[in-house]
Image (cartoon, rainbow, N blue to C red; front, top):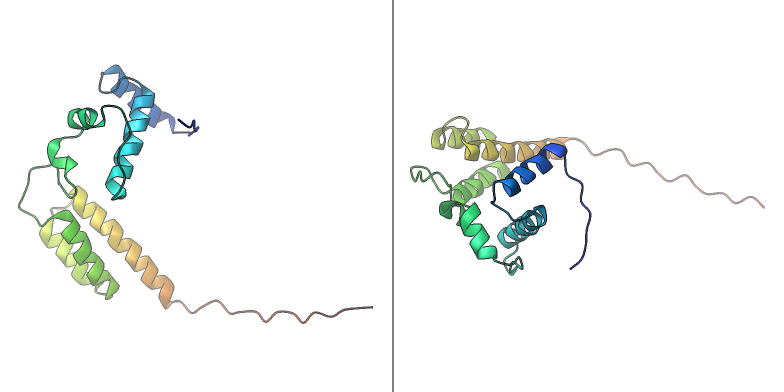
Length: 150
């Protein structure tokens, strides 16, 4: 194994230590290895976790409905699947229909819902990108002619 030093804010380390004390993880190292494997397995299609007893830890720590990609974890099947919502909001934002995207979020989610908050954050990023594209480009300076003195 390769050793890598990473610095975390003190409150994060305190939470990790409390999980170890509660017995959810055998050690902080196990937590760090599991969390890295978990994120990589969720973001990279071909990644296979290498943490010993990964499946057992995942079953103990992560609720079953949250283990499914796109699972809401709240058992509420009234709203649209989250990743479908992300795709729809993205499509509207790319077309510049920000108010339509806001209306969609407002009608599909209750205020304060974690998915609504994430969708609004995503929408804000698209707004900022659009605002940047609307700005005139910075004037390009002609390079100063170089002169050689002999």
